[in-house]
Length: 399
Image (tube, rainbow, N blue to C red):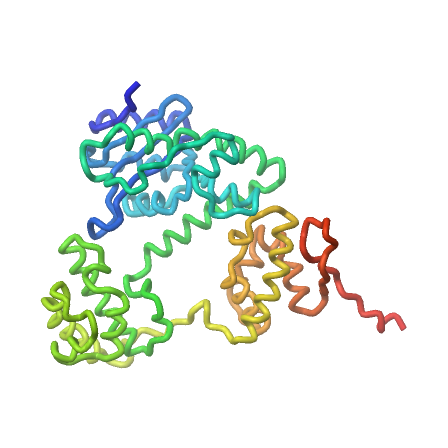
């Protein structure tokens, strides 16, 4: 039987009604990320317990009905590694999904591997093998082949079965609230990232002065507007590293700007005068209108970093004992943030490792390690964990 593909608006609206009546759907997208100003959708795939269908977004005038379903409070949308799907939803509706499930995150909470590919999760959870041979496809080219369609629908056809088994396990092991918190956190973090100004996404800006921040802000706005007008990715208008070089050198003429290697490429040369003019205007911005310096999460002393590595041993031990992926629980950055907050007495929001379910499983231990109330030794060879952490008792206090 040929795969079902929807190419008419009325059929799409009927599908959305069907999904809403089911209350549970697997969702995936195929897209091209470097063809235009924004990533462009090439296909949407859906699977309920009754249907497995693809939607051609190039033929459907409006996808708004789906974004309304995805962001309602009654429909559970199950994805795998759904960062792109969440971004498309935010861009299409301005909202985040309210009942999103990600089987990649769920698997990281019941095993030590994260992130796992869709194929690996299906094989691990269901014992089925999927052939993946269309990862380099051009999803904007028509017509799509039968192999492309099969690949795309395979990406959703097993998702609900995977989630059914995962949800039973998470509930039985009292980890469902972990998963729900992580699904919501991912949505909120992507929403926050989408709301960042273009210049705030550029690596290394925390090292810039306030004047340099004003310049890079102006250049980033110019780059974004030019990229949107020409429908090209912003990085193709001007690479981040070249943008940072312009900020540091502040050329006042085209000839000075050309002194930077790679700036003499034809795609850059035609815009150099505009860049120089943008820099000149930013240099004139009054002091009281300059952006504030940016505090970066990675700003920490070498001592903090050494201590964070020690805490990493404790965290790794907890994750091994609970059989949960350490990369999902906490990163080196999270550990350094914890050290800086507790040793430096920083006020404000508690570090991530002390919040929610993370605080439940490792917060107390990490605090005790920092306070010197815990010591550790190597475990016997047959132990589940490589180390044993024991609360230190001051025997001298007994005398």
